[in-house]
Length: 230
Image (cartoon, rainbow, N blue to C red; front, side):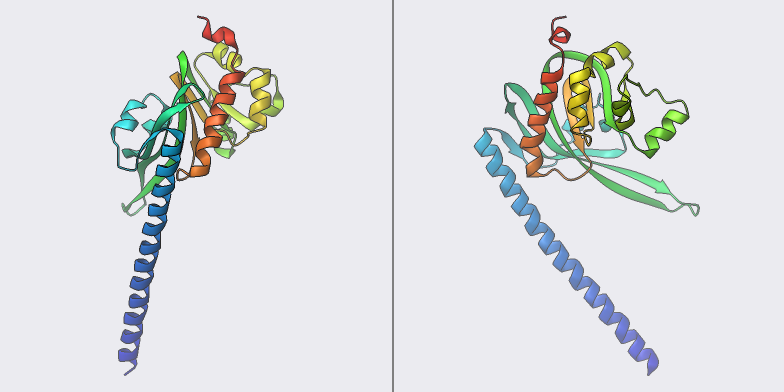
């Protein structure tokens, strides 16, 4: 008798679990439909193109940026294209997969979603990566990483900067730029060729679009004009 009740309890718990999965899937789908609609309305209002469909060409197009060299099964969703304050621009949600293997040989996969917003500058530039300082980056520096330090101790403590062209890194991280980035300490950016991109370690959100596009244009405004005269 006890076994019967135990078995019935297991079936009940399993049934509750299945119902919860179905409910969560339903509300997740509704939320995604709402997000797509808001994206479409924003794109139409802004004169941009927009597609929610999976796009495997986007990660290939920007493969020169480090973020697009991580993991596998790389693809983009919710792809926006247009112009912003005179600059060619794009935004999309980048998805890729990584995996880990435990001591028993069991592999676990993780899917990552990153919001990407970018503008195209007037000419090509060397690779430059700037992202917030954290524990892992400090460990990397301790082990001999190539982080570039600046006269501003506050900026050097707040950001990790990598570039093979140190002169360009110093030109880019001028006094005005450092002051501006210290007011936006969550900034994670990459610049290479003509592409200046910022990244959010989360799903692409509507509120990110306008604010990050303006953020990119503001950073362009802090770049010395002599960099564009070569």
